[in-house]
View 1 (cartoon, helix red, strand yellow):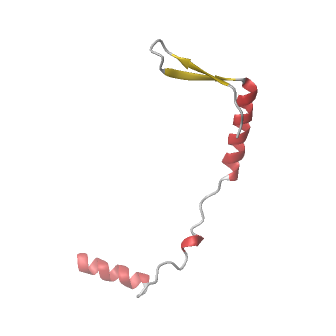
View 2: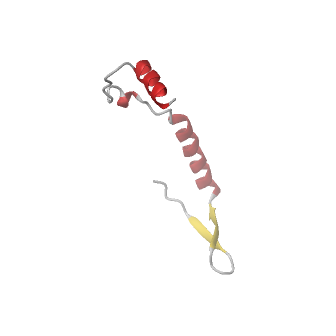
View 3: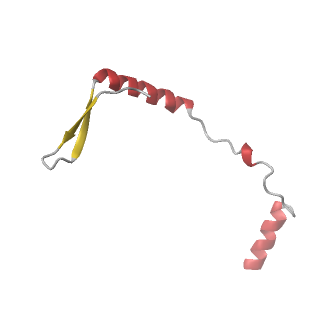
Length: 70
């Protein structure tokens, strides 16, 4: 975790409206965000392979269900 020095800016009712950080800290954050953007990939669905046990062929099931509802 980064140790970032920050200053909270508030309005006249003391509600936070902005955060000020050093430019060097901002550059570190930008770099981390870019690294994370390129590191993430699409989730794999292989963990679900073989989870469902089918009792009939998928296409046959689909045709049967369509005939029952139509």
